[in-house]
Image (cartoon, rainbow, N blue to C red; front, side):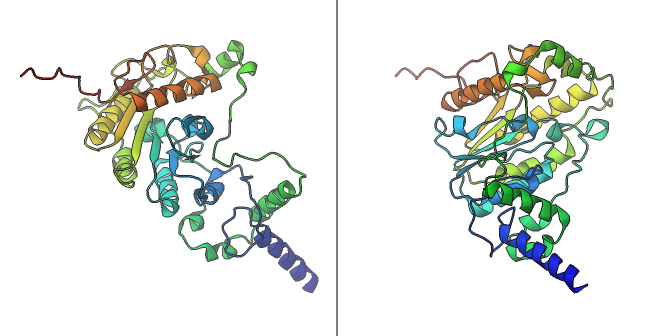
Length: 338
């Protein structure tokens, strides 16, 4: 029994010294990398990094936005906190954690996709990934009670192997990691096998119409008002391939239309706020070869979107076939003649 206790104590000491998620007050002074697949465990470590002054929020549809591309043109240092299937309440918690360490960000980008806009029978399923609530409470000493488990041991081993050079794969230190294949591996046949599982929506909305999703009404004001008005807020709708643009008047279409109206009405009264809609008919949405599946675009598409975001920030009146600004900027009126 004493041997078992000693072995357990040694393993626990190993975990807290390696500190795989970098949140303990006392641990080895290592340069830690994100090694855990569930980014909910790694984001608090990245949020504490003093390099960052700007933040991106979103789901998988925002993960391909690269800080290295956007930083210079937007005069920012971004942390991409987008996560697969991140629910709005999770995105709000991520933002609060970032603001704990960076209370006056230069830029905040919010990716508004189906997790914000759909509800009822169309709602995105809740993510089964565990949420480590203790990491987001601002009480790091609690971590010593939370690391006595096999998952923490597994991730400590992964972090240790990375530190001594026996492992080389890790996630990006600025939150960016590509989760799609290289463009060189794309084939239409492969994409067709994914597209076949997506079909039109035949549900009809109630006769009284629909409002914006309750989750959006609950959390989007919190997210947008959490930052000061000196922060540039960029709210953007990612492109979804045309196969998902269901017939006008369907339940899916009605919920997205209500979503757009709500964002426009909310952001229209907020200073320093830019809303960009990429989910419009045009050269991105209408071209299946821009996507891996109906909601996940390719790397070349991400490059195009980032270029468009940069252009829209610098000139909101610039016309583009890829996006529209919501609401459109006021037309330039000629100066009065005296």
